[in-house]
Amino acid sequence: MRVKEILSLLDEISPFSLQESWDNSGLQVGDLYQKIENVYLCIDLDLELIASLPPKSLLITHHPLIFGKLASIEYNSYPAKLLVELIKKDITLIAMHTNFDKTHLNAYVAKHVLGVEPECEEFICYFEKNMDFDKAFHWVREAFGLVAPRYVRAKKQIERIALTTGSGGGLLDLVKADLFLTGDLKYHDAMKAKMMGINVIDIGHFESERYFADALDTQLQRRGIKAIIASIKNPLEVSNERVY
Image (cartoon, rainbow, N blue to C red; front, top):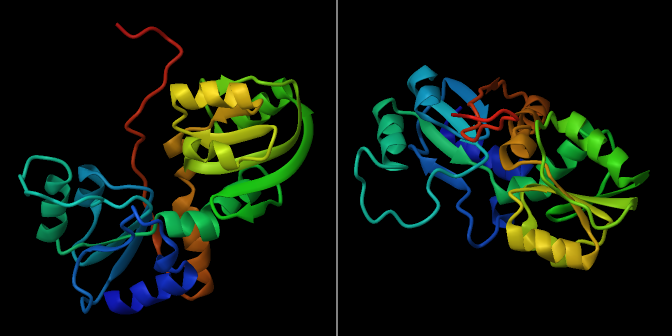
């Protein structure tokens, strides 16, 4: 298939028109008429991943490599260095970010990681769960494989839970739940949640969105497209031990 055909198929799966105004999903690097030999899926990309891909591949990531305006392309800076390596190997890059969050990723994580059937409202998934906070904390930590998750304890009993993968602290005013599961929790968001009486468990940005490749692969398989799930390491490391 050519890039143009795959881009059209991706738009059917999750319309790019649904992305937020600040987002930059869609074709990032490549030629629309290039024939693609291999398709790879990953949450993000780094130099190690690019080096492992054969030429003329298509890489579909969750996060766009190019977000804002590029004032210059200095070969050893970020993201220019990655762009140069992609172009050298004739690798096409497509991003599916906030559009895929809304249509698939949040619901996929709720169903396949937490084992619940959610009701979805754009970026927020809701489901009922009657338990106390301590039990919910251990359940969520085990489900996502979190080492030392941060949290806000605002109340003891939980009946309704909200989930937003990635960074969802800015959605607090929209959350109508006793517990909010999201990543990248900021200090002032934590203060706000405490005041609003909403428990929060920080499920991590990478940790909650690493299921992107699995979620998209499921959709591609239904349409007869074979893809390879690639992986990168989380650049943020967590340890319970003191590092010297």
